[in-house]
Structures are given as structure tokens and as C-alpha cells.
Amino acid sequence: MNPASLGAFEPGNQTILCKASRIRLQSPINLWTFQAKKPKKWSSLVGLAPLSSSQMNTQLTGHSLVSGISIQETDSVFQAINPANDQALDPAYKQLSSDSVDAVALQAKKAFSSYRNCSGAEKAAFLRQIADNIEAVVEDLVERMPSETALPEPRVRGEAGRTMGQLRLFASLVEEGSWADARIETAQPDRQPLPKPDVRSLLSPLGPVVVFCASNFPLAFSVAGGDTAAALAAGCPVIVKAHHSHPGTAEIVGQAIMKAVESCQMPVGTFSLIYGSGREIGTALVQHPAVKAVGFTGSRTGGTALMKVAAERPEPIPVYAEMSSINPVVILPGALQAKGPQLAAGLHGSVTLGLGQFCTNPGLVFLPAGDSANSFAEILKGALTETAQGHSLNDGIAESYRKTLQEIAALNQDGVTVHHDASNTGGDQKCQVGTALAQVTTEAFLSNPALHQEAFGPSTILVTYQNPEELVRALSTLEGQLTGTVHGLENELGGATEIISALQERVGRILFGGFPTGVEVCHSMVHGGPFPSTSDGRSTSVGSMAIQRFVRAVCFQSAPDGMLPDELKNSNPLAISRLVNGTRSTDPIS
Figure 1 (cartoon, rainbow, N blue to C red):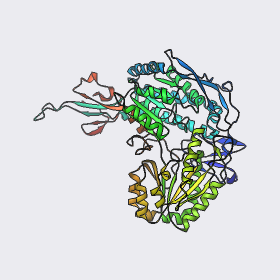
Figure 2 (tube, rainbow, N blue to C red):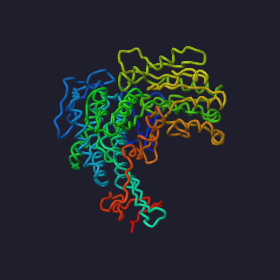
Figure 3 (cartoon, rainbow, N blue to C red):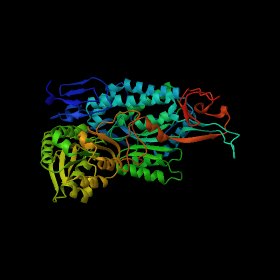
Figure 4 (cartoon, rainbow, N blue to C red):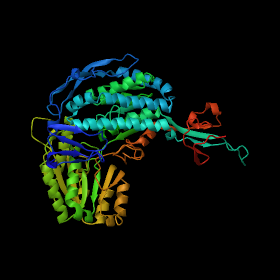
């Protein structure tokens, strides 16, 4: 098999091989690394003709999914647009009337009074049923999602696998139960000078959560994505605001969740899927007093707007927004000298993965100035020049990508070199874009805010540094990031503590080797970082710790045993691990 003719997605030890004539999925994936010399155009792997819902088992309705109440919709409709050919896709979707926002939110509030009391086993069964229902409609997603996003079939299957994996991870978490962090301090009535009361606490769900779907992850960060899975696991009903770019994909998944609500006999209103304007309907949802938290993945402009709305409520609520990140990569001198060509090839694969439309795309690479850096740039330039153009998820992303690169090119000053820019194809297709590469000195980087912007597409900027002190100074000026990566030989890393410390202050995840495009869904993952990468760097949107965003601590003092939640009762009926008088234990309290 000729590797030059293939694109290899490598999820750990699993592999998906993509060829123009066939697509073979060996196993579901949740982590991708892409390597290819000259990949086929994305459009060669997607159906260009609009797909009808009659070709799928799921019948698309073009309406919001709300059960148990009557809702009103406006006369305004919108359709998904195929990025590969600018054609509108049926059906047309009606937008929810702002007058119905109150009814949807109050229904979720009513559902909360029952859903919050569901046992871990009941919530686990519900989450697993959602995953099973999504698995049953994967072929429908394979038909619909590429037409709405220009993403290829392997990406659809891989992201579906990741979405199901997230749901099942949270199911296992709540089924076991220790996540609630039960803490018990038993009474000491004879303590002097004052008696000690019985004090017990645990994490309790906040209330209804509004989730905004992401444009770049139509499954894993959307209707049944990490935010929804974490909120449902915590005991919070979810209202999802669909993304306008992939409404059909959203409805397929939304119907799968609605079926799980019904079959698992969850309260009506535990889940709703809403279509409408983010500015109008989204804002109204965030402002509603029944809503207690928000999950968002998208632009910095959108995220900060929601933060402002939430902060100005009479009762402010948390907004967990994942926003912009340029994910710096640091290459130390020894690593560049020893592995320059391999690092350039790996960087090329990471930059072009998914047409660069990943929140962890490495948009900034620091490397020591000199001949090795110049050779690195030439290798990377050659690979990017040979990379075929593709189609952005929507025309807004394509336009923003081109604008950011135009600002860099317009700098036209010493210390700034544009090696390659195919971002503006000059063609008729609005979403078609290509790769780009710029190289700048540290001095130019420090003096130009345009070089600190996120370019959401297949491009990166090389920043050459003269010495470690200059590198640390540059890293210290960065805004908050999701990731930071260090490439260094083993004997170099021990002397790079200041560099690593500078990164640690600004990122949520530090990689030693490899590239950041790939987020493993597991208990220890942190997918978050200081502002503006996220609105709250104390949280994560991936992994089981995400459940902590949708809960609050509640304390019970001197409560009768029969009034306590099961997690805090003396008999420990759930057999969970608890902190009892400062010692971790699963034993009952006698």
C-alpha cells in the first residue's frame, strides 16, 4: 500500500485508511492524528448532491423538538447550505418564536424537580440508551452530515463513536456514584468548648442547562456532545440550541435523544432541541430565570456576548464557553536539529487535519533561529503548497479565515515573511480555502497583535527566537490557550523549566512531544484553559470532570438520617467511596 496515496487517521493504535475509491473504517475513534503527503480534496469524499430525508430512516421534520407543550414558530425559515457546492438542503427549518422560550424553559424547570432525583443507575441507563439510539442512526448521519459540513465519512463515523463513548463514560461515572464527592463529619456532642454538629455535603445538580451546538464538531460538541452528556449525568435537564450550519444532523441526534427520554420514562422536558436565531432565541434562553448554566463552543465574540448576558441577569449564572486558542508549539534546539524533517511532517498533518478547523489547531510554532529553522520552513512550505484546497464548514468561517490572513499579509514589514497563502482561492465557491504559512521574528511577533489572532483554518505561523530568554518573553505575552506543546530531547527538557513554567501559566494541557489535535476522552483529560480559550479555566469540556460544571455543593447539618440523600446516609446504600471524618471509606457508619 502506497502511503503517498492515502490519508491515515491514527487514533492511538487504531487506524482509518481513506482512499478516493473506498473508505474503510476499522473501528470507532475519539482521537485523530492526520498524516498525508497530498490528500485528496475533501469534496471528493462527500456527496455533492443535496440529500432528501426520504433516503434516511430518520424523517427530518424541519421543526424544534419539544414534547408535552404547544409551541409557536415564526414564518422565517432557513436551510442548511452544502459548503462544497453552495446548494440549499431540504428540509427548511422553522425558527422558534421568542414567545415560546418561556414555555420551553418552564417545562425544563418542571422536569428538573423530578429528574434531579433520578438514581445513578437510572441516569446511566438513560445515557446508554441515548448512545444506543445514536448508534442505530449512524448511517443516517453518514448520509446527512457530509452534505451539511463537507466533512468526510470517516470523520462522521469517528465523531459518532466519540459521542457515544462520552455518553457511556458518564453513564459509568454516575452508576458508580463516587463523583458526588460525599463528605461526612460525624457529631461530637461532648467536644469542648463547643459541641461539634453532624455535617455532611455532596454535589447537587444546578438546574436546567442551555447548550449551544458547535459548528466544527456537529456531533461530539453539539446536541448529544460533552456539554449535554455532563449536564444530563449531573441531573440537569438540557435545552439545546441547534447550529444553523447542520440542522439536519442536529435533528437526527435530537430524535434519538427524544426516543430515549420516552423509552426510559424520563420526565417530559428533560431534553429539548430548539431552532432559532442565536442573537434572539439564544439570548432569551440565557436570560430566562429557570436556566441555571450555559455550555457553549464557538467564537470569542459569541462566547463573550453570552457571558455578558448571563452576568447582567438579576441572578447571574455561569457560562462555560470554549472560544479561541492558537495552541503554541515550542521546538527546542536539540529536537529541531535531530528531528526537524519529522517534526515538519507531523506539524503539517496537524495543521491540515479537518482543514484546520479544530480548537486545538497548532497556529503558532516557536523554533530557534538559524539554518535549521529555515530548512524546517522550506519543508513545511513544500508540504502545505502540495496540499489540496478544501471547503470550510460554512462561509462565515471561510471569510473570517481569509480576513485574518489578509491582516498578516498587510503587515509588510521587516521580520514578517509570508511563505505561502492559498487561503483566497478566487473561485466561485464561498467556502473553498487553502493552506497558508508565515514566518516572523520574535520582535515582530511581540509588536503586532494581528499575529496573536486565531486563524481558523489550515495555516500556522513560525516564530523564530534567538535564545531561551527571548522565548520566555514571547510566551509570557500570550493569552490563555487550550494547549501548549514542547518538543525537546530528554537532556534538554531538564534545562527548560522556565519555558515549561511560562506555558503552564497560560494553557490547560501541556504536551511533551506529539501535536495537540486530538483530545482523549477520559477521566483525567483537561480541555480548557485561561481566558479567552475558555470563560473559566477551572473547568474542562472533555472528560468526566466536566460534570463538576453543572453542580453545586450542598451541606446538610444535623439532619435525620431518613432526610439525607442516599449518598450521605449512614448505611451507605450505594456502597460509594466517601470521605468520613477525613478518611476515605466505603463502610457504613455505625
